[in-house]
Length: 66
Image 1 (spheres, rainbow, N blue to C red):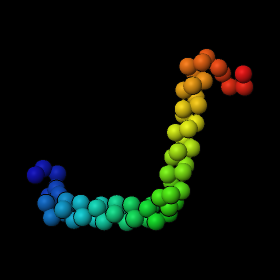
Image 2 (image 1 turned 90 degrees about the horizontal axis):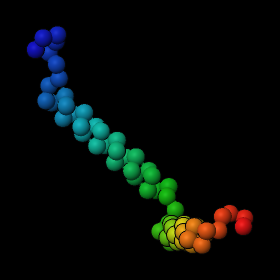
Image 3 (image 1 turned 30 degrees about the horizontal axis):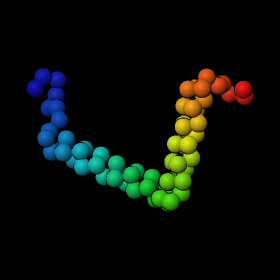
């Protein structure tokens, strides 16, 4: 190869393994810090309700504070 030896397949595979390991560690940390399922479902329901209220306001042509 011109300009140098380039990357070997073993180097690429080692980089992939390191990336997978790092991604798994980050995912594990994020999951351990997330709220319990019951709390998440409560907040998700609150979000769904708020979106529904906004959709109704748009349908009825009512703006905020009116």
